[in-house]
Image 1 (cartoon, rainbow, N blue to C red):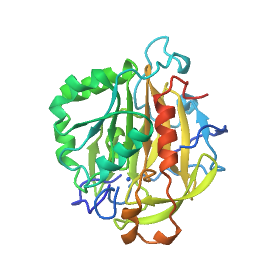
Image 2 (cartoon, helix red, strand yellow; image 1 turned 180 degrees about the vertical axis):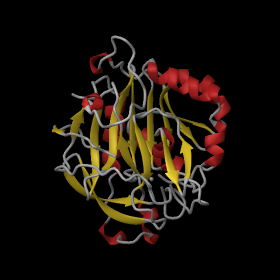
Image 3 (cartoon, rainbow, N blue to C red; image 1 turned 60 degrees about the horizontal axis):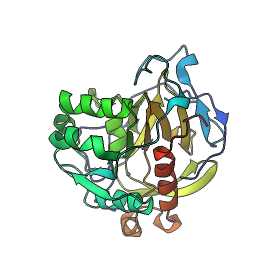
Length: 306
């Protein structure tokens, strides 16, 4: 997320990796990223080579079950091509100033018209015609957005995904997608549409540019208190897209029934205007093409583990 969080939001990946190569695929300087507190999870993640990894974490016996359960007979091969006609982008309370605009630019580059939703109460009526629902960078305090997702709205989103819908969450949108996160002794429950808990990777609110291993290539990417993802046991298919320098999960793609979800802690959609206040900004180069490729793969009917 961006901007400082009022002590509200914060919070492993034991991802056994199988290397594969696929397509290349949080927000503005002081207005489109996300900030969280220090993660309190102590389970360490195994270091890997940083290349894209496919895994089905159901084989892990040390992880607690979490995330979406696969429907009987549902496999990665049954992923449906994304239906709908537009990218539905959240731009309501706590959306960062340039967050919706930046992800809208990515959606347009992927050939999608854009529709905005500012009131989560409208989500059930808008999702049926949406090709993808996107929550990008946010402000610090996610509590208004958490509260906006009533049981009706959450059920609508999960039904949409189960039946072939798509969700993209970047930084704040990644925290929201997770099962939850901890901060200073409090636990905050997310939407639970990915089989992972989240937590602040650095616990540092200031924006910066840092190295991220994205599909096997190290890129200098904009980051502002975005999440690290701690994967849990799941029947769904999971593919690691990116890792931080220490090998922890920075971005991944997973199935959800016949739909798919993609999340990222760093901001591949970041614009040049965000970089001026970021530490190590001189090392940044645009990674917008990674965001476009990630969105295109998310929209495709390709199985997650292909």
